[in-house]
Image (cartoon, rainbow, N blue to C red; front, side, top):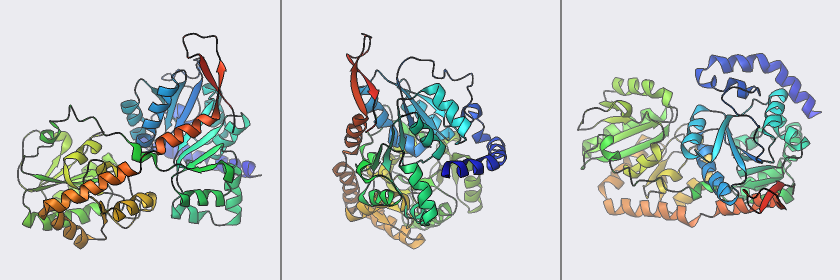
Length: 443
C-alpha cells in the first residue's frame, strides 16, 4: 500500500520537482544521472568488476564517509567503488578525497524509473549510505534485487524523530526500515529511536560516530597557508566555520567588541554555502568592517578585518591556524555542523544552542571542557576575552577538545567489521584478484 501511495504522490509532484531542479543552476549538473538515464560522462555499469555503492548526500557526509571508503578499498581492492552525492560540493569532495579509489555519480531522484535505471546499470552487490538518507523507492528496489543495504553513522535528530510521531507515519517508515540489512547508529539514543520507528532490533548496532576517526589533513605542504590568508605572525585568527545568515551578524558584532581590547585579532567567516559570499561581503561593508575575500587576496593587509573564506577544501586546515573556533549552524535553528574539525587540531570550540545534529559531540566537548556553548553576543565576547587573554587556559581547553576526539575513536573499525558480515568469500579463477573474492549475502 505504502509503495503505491508514495509513487502516486511522487508522480503528481514530478513536474514541480523537475522544474525546481532545472531552475537552480547548482542542481543542473548531472541531470541525466539524477533522472536515472545514462549520460556521456558515465561509463555506467559496463565493468565486470563487482561493485559497492556508497551514498553520501553532501560535503559533510562525504568527509565522514571518505575514510570508510578508503578502508574498504584497502581491505577489498577487488571491488569497484561508486560514491553518489546530491550536491556539487559533495561531488567536489569525492573527487578531491577519493580520486583513484572511487568514481562519482549524482544520486538518482527517488522516482521509480530513475532508481531502477541506476540499479540496473550499476548492478551493485552492496549499498552503504551515510547518516539516515532514507529513499523509499531506492531501498524497496534494492530489497527486491536482494542487494543488502547498510546504514552507517546513523542518527535521528529530535526534530526529525518528532515529525514521525503519528502512527500512520511510523507505519510508512517501518515499511522502509525493514528493508535494511544493518543499521549502524551513532548512539544509544539513535538506536532507540530507529527501533521505535520500525527497524528490526536484531539488525541495529551502536558503533559510534565515524567522524571521530577522521585523519588530520596533510599539513606538510601547508606551511604557507597562514601567509596565503594574509596573516601577520603576531595576528590571532578567530575562525567561524560553516556559518549561516543570522549568526554571521552576531559574530561580527562580537568581533567589533573584541578588537577594542585585542586589536591584533582577525575574524574569518567561512559561509556554509560559498555562493553566499557576496551577500556576506555586502553585510560586512554595511557594518563598516574592512573585508577581504580569500579568493582575491593580492596584497597584505593589516589591522582589524574580516576575511571571507570563499574557497573550497581549505576549512579543515584553516582551523589549525585559528586560536579560537566557532562552528556554525548553531546560533540559528539549523542543528549544527562538524564540531570535531577544529577540536582535532586542539583548537577551543564555541557553538550555539542549536546542536540537534551534533548533540552527543556538543555534550562530550562541554563535559571535557574542550568546548563551550554560547547563546548570544555577550557570551561570545566573554569566551573570547577569556581565551584570548589567558593563553594557558586556551591551551588547556584546546588540548581537552583534542583528547575528547582521541578517546572516542574506533567507530570506523567497528563499522567496517560489521559491514564485512554482509560479505562471504568465494573462490575465483581470476589470478589478478585476490584468492578470495567476495559476493554479498544478506545477514
